Image 1 (cartoon, one colour):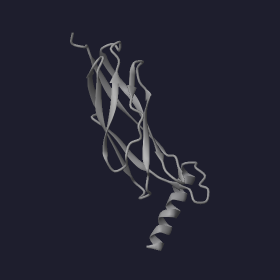
Image 2 (cartoon, rainbow, N blue to C red):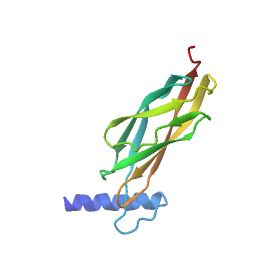
Image 3 (cartoon, rainbow, N blue to C red):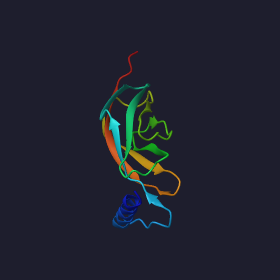
Length: 137
């Protein structure tokens, strides 16, 4: 077991060096997979919708949470900034104001940043498409 942990630690140092991160004593690099489902989200203007956020650690290092935020969205589109629990499929609320024009908004960016004690923050990004429909009077 100790030998296996030493190999994992050495791998993390190599990953840190390759990614340009300098690891201080006791710091860990926690890699994770980040997925948004569905990839195409449909919502009426003036409403909100939940999407599924899946966070899966890849290195076996414990992440306490991952913060998720929109990084490129049309004016009037916002999201719940709460941290997402790791190893679960969490609902993440996206709100669309009534003044957002109907249409298809491709490439909306979402950023996830790992959080935890002695962890170097790791950032992952993904995109999704938002289809805004006219509000029904």
